[in-house]
Length: 326
Ligand SMILES: [Zn+2]
Ligand SMILES: [Zn+2]
Ligand SMILES: [Zn+2]
Image (tube, rainbow, N blue to C red; front, side):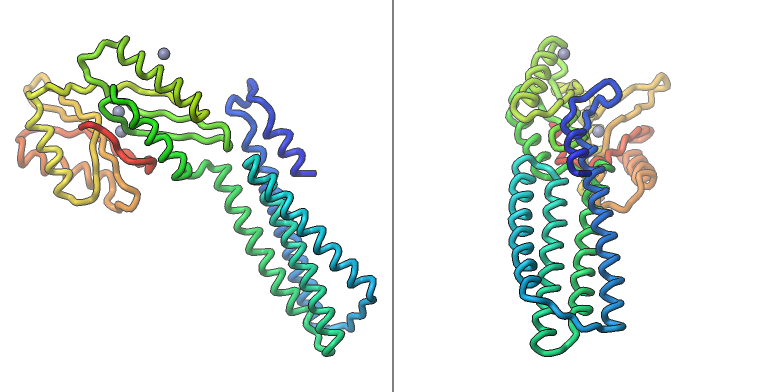
């Protein structure tokens, strides 16, 4: 029932109140199913413990054995069916339902095995087998809950998606580079992204707009991604600030932290001092704080350039590599 409601909602078109569509409702129904699975697991732990504490004679007729075997076969068919459809239409809810059915298969097999062992040896194993199965169910429910909560919080986009976008962006020879890729996913088929695209600053606005329009159009038609491009002009022939730019690169490289820069810009202040602005991309594993980096970059730049001030934006997007020209 929950699955059906989740699906109906997920398939709905975006509307006034939910402009990003309804695909995340599928994660909500998946989360609810996982919580139900969790409760079933807890119930099973309790009943298994009861059986271990006070073992009771388990007598099963031949009919019961046959019914157990048939239900195992039916459940397995269901698992296969849900998985197949779930993967075809990329539905995490159906894959969760498949896992639920697979849990039923293990539970039933456990009951069947312990009944057979008990009938032939007289050992009371059903409680222990049940406990093992219950623990398995709890673990699988916990991992499902984690997946759905990640979907709802908006987790790191898949490597595959980032690589596909990177590759597509690199096919444009007209652009000098790109950086600051951001991806917002509201479900498997609702992807919004933005990227900074670098252009030769001698180009006209019309030229740059023409290329960004083409990129946005291509992303929609080739990958169903709603992409918006931000235009960054780059003064490729400017010799005036080349020395400053090289000093910045030398300082950054010296730290050996894997930092990269983009959006380099120099402003001359009224008192003759120079204000250097740029972004620094900080890799995920770096533990140095932005404030510490800002202080030491400024300190090191002044040793080379004298009275300058660096104004830095630190990027912590962790999405894709920096493909900036400078
Ligand atoms: Zn930029
Ligand atoms: Zn436009
Ligand atoms: Zn940036």
